[in-house]
Length: 566
Image (cartoon, rainbow, N blue to C red; front, side, top):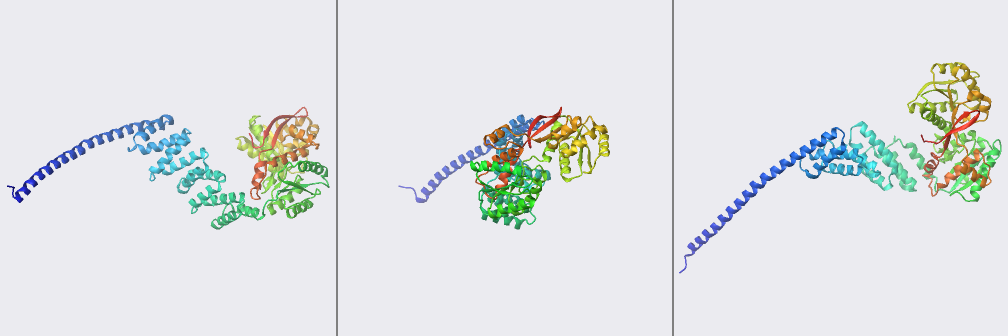
């Protein structure tokens, strides 16, 4: 006989309840064990980790304060590796990046710094880390990454000195970036003032690559968004280059084939014929006569540019002809090379290129040589009241000061003066160790005896290639003995042999002209827009200057120094 339904149901529920109570008890016990025991262990481990991290940080920070970055880094790396959840982790990561940078481990500095930027975007050291990462990329020659981070720092930072340093780095790297990289930066920072510089270099790069439409678009955008842009002149110039059309592969040569300087012009013509006959250049040469006259020189230049469409002009001409040609070349946006010029003011004119043998260059070189190689400290300068000589004198004085020496007197005199007694007496009072004569050959011959006569006979005379004339030791006699000066170097032996082999006249003019044409062989596949830059890079720093001293009436070479070198 079975149990009643309700009794069976009750008994079943009793059994089920027992099971449920048992399971609940086990669950409660398990939960309490899981809650109580691990909690105590985790707290204890966390406290110990925090303590160990704090001790390591204190040790690292102590080394850091003493600028012992190697030992400091050991401690900081331990914290970064083992104790990521502690309070010491953030400062250890930041200071670790700094130590890596100081130890010139720039790749590691980038890793630490970028990790810090990602994990602590609200830190008060965020901008410092950004600058550190940018500088590290700069030292790794990763120009785009460096520019990205330093530009971001520049836009957000308030520290004026830090922003200035970042700005200088940015301007240094922008010309090295590709068009694609510049486009990315432009998109990122187009709402910022820094985009003025990014846009200009983007448009410039596009112009140099022959992307005419893109360059015109971005130059126009630059001038529209930044109407007072510092690049207004450059932008207008590039637009003019673009409007000139495609390069023709022709160069115009202006030579004085008749008139006062015809003997020089005829010699140089033989050099041109040698280059053309042997196809030694990647462009063709087209010659017209200047007739040794400024007006005829300009007319000949106009024919070369307008009728033949030459890409640039080469003019080994006199200063009188060069002046008018500079104005013409600037107006037509045509590069002009003056291989014979010794006047520094020509090199300051846009699109005009010289080979760096100007009197200003010579003055700077002799200033450095006399300061470092001769050990002189106190200098005086004497020059006639004429703009060219004044420029040479100022270049010498500026170089002396730049090299931490002293200019004790800087005295001028009227160009028609016969005696310079008053000027020399004023110089003598200052007791200089050397006197720089910024003057021409005839003036040197007249001034040197007076320098000795008025009590400066023990002083060292310094100068430029105006001393490099046989007339100076012959007429200046003992008064120019010991004078030290800088002049363009003598004809290179290799060049002399090449001229002889080609049966060309061996003299200073043909050697300079021949050497300059040889240097231009590297300019090929150029565009109108990048031609000025290529010419400047090709000719820059190629001139070697020589230091001479007059001994027993002879010119004794003391040193050969490349322009721009120490």
